[in-house]
Each structure stands twice: as structure tokens, then as C-alpha cells.
Image (cartoon, one colour):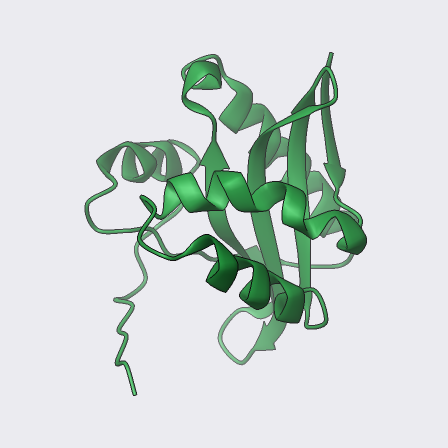
Length: 140
């Protein structure tokens, strides 16, 4: 049975194997553990998709208020295990996320996706997301 929920903060390490795959194993596992340990104390929640007690999908949710979009949430590190892709689960997951954040009073969703992740671009366009700008990063 397919289930969507917010993962309890003390269980955050359970999603690290999925995020490790998402980042193509470029960020060391122990670094991810350290970062997620810090993230759970910020304006962050982690939504998960579960089948038969197995986490098969993950989506971080960052909450803030921005001058141009009001109360907004940013889905982050969205990942669904390969064996469960192409079955409509991503759409169901995002429909659940839309309802969940709407109930919390949020009025906009904005996100970043890797330039090379063409499948995600197609998915987000199909979900009526529009390109608003570019995301820049500078390492210090």
C-alpha cells in the first residue's frame, strides 16, 4: 500500500541512502549524515513515499516567506527509486505535497533542478511549474 507522510526527525538518516543515489555518490555518506542532522533543526521537513514499510521516495521541504512569492515551500532532493519510476507515483507524491503545504497556509512552491536532469524538467513542466530565473552557486 502506497503511503505519504512527513518523516519523524529522529528517523532522518533513513533517507540518506536515497539522497546518496540522487547525488550520484559525489557527496560522502558521512557528510550527508552531518548535513541532515543540522537541517532537521531548521525550517525543514522531509516527506517520504512508502510501500510496505519501505521508503521508496523522498522530498525535502524548506519553508520561508519571500517578497515576490509570499509564504513558499521549496521541494529539495526529490528522489524516487528506479524500480518505482514511470508508474505515476511522482504525480501522486506531489499532489499529496500540494495538499499538505496548502493546509499549512503556504501559497507557492518553487524549486531547483539540476540542468542535466531532463526527466525532472519534463515532470515539472507537466505539473505547471514555470521557469522564473537561474540558480547560481559560488563555493567559498
